[in-house]
Length: 297
Image 1 (spheres, rainbow, N blue to C red):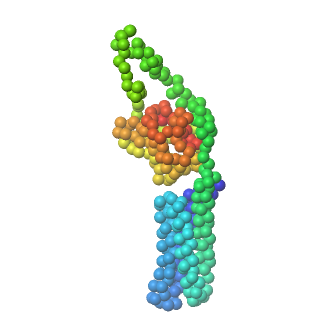
Image 2 (cartoon, helix red, strand yellow):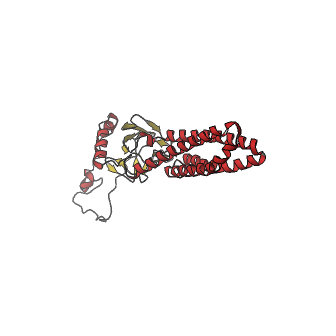
Image 3 (cartoon, rainbow, N blue to C red):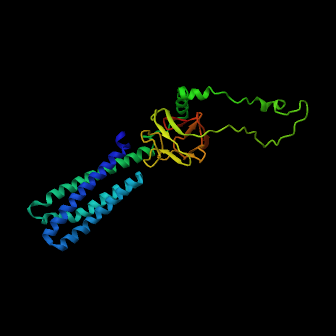
């Protein structure tokens, strides 16, 4: 399964395809120039333009880091090779001293590389589509995973902190300046009592369980950090197949206060065992992305 979730392998194939095309281009242009002179050089460059254009699509796909663009690039590359071969199959016979034979085998090699590239990308898309390579984690197992992380010493420190006594909000007589026996003003039933909890600046997140246990990512004030499998993410979690390409976002304001937002990920982002959309996080809090539990410090 790891073959289909291996971006470095795809980039190696793109590099090999480029080297092969460079050899084909040099040999074909040189051979046709020798046979037909300037006109042969112009014709050979025009014919190779099909393949070069399709190869550029492969490069764009790697920059965009999109498997859909990769699939389109692989198909385009194959079409470019087929178009070029329709001309080269005749022209290569014109090159003297058997000079066309190595070019012919290089074309076969380029076609094989392109086919391998396309197969890997298409199988990866199919696996993701049917959740075979990156299965959705059941809510029960995610909660169990989170509870396991709560046994970590770093999380237990937070659990040991004194909790705010909320009983005063249930008994109005215990409120400051309350007059015993005096009628209390009626409250709007639509109003919700809200207790402000002191927030503290966040400086980093540390993996305390799962695929990225032990990993540390520093946070800076005024910065936004995307968590995901994509190489473009500031917090790249490529080693965890339960993580979406762009899974969640940590926004740190100028005062250092952090907000965690889920970006519509497949498996969701958990805080205290529940999926969240957006929540303010402070040092001591923990959250789950994919199979990894992170603690905010």
